[in-house]
Length: 199
Ligand code: ATP
Image (cartoon, rainbow, N blue to C red; front, side, top):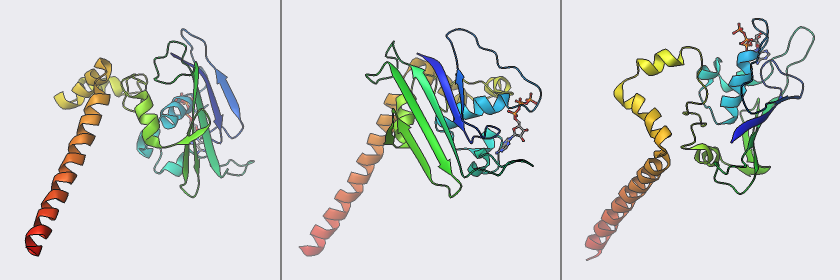
């Protein structure tokens, strides 16, 4: 599995449609200060479901939409697609290429797609769970992140190891099942109350 292409449109400093092709191996993105290098990695994190505007260096989610310049009007939406080579089937989908797309409008409305089919943010999070690529993954190490990891508390650091060990998916499912069970137990108690009222 590797990142093959990144398509940007209206995302931060990229008003035009831009396609960035990557090969296997090392790719370096170089450019003067403020030219948009970090915006490229922000785009990858955003399309993978990042919900914290602060971690994308903005105040609100709308800040990812091209805000205009002296000569250019602001845009109404931002769209990013990530195209992943999945020949090794590391992503649990029967496609050799997986495209994930996220679009956001100034109204706040958001859309997610996997290979062109509309989906929920949860589907994207589940797709990348335990691959190291997701929002909480370790595939993108931003400035200051190493320090953050080294000084993290035990519980926080443990999350990285759990992602690498591939058990996050099972833990998430267990927690979901436990919370469903808890709800059903509450429902049963309510049914018991109603029955005893009727008797
Ligand atoms: P450095 O080398 O200093 O870290 P960089 O190449 O990583 O810089 P970025 O931080 O990716 O640069 O890009 C910053 C640029 O992106 C700034 O010029 C900023 O004005 C522009 N920018 C960020 N958000 C938007 C937006 N919503 N609309 C238009 N431009 C934006």
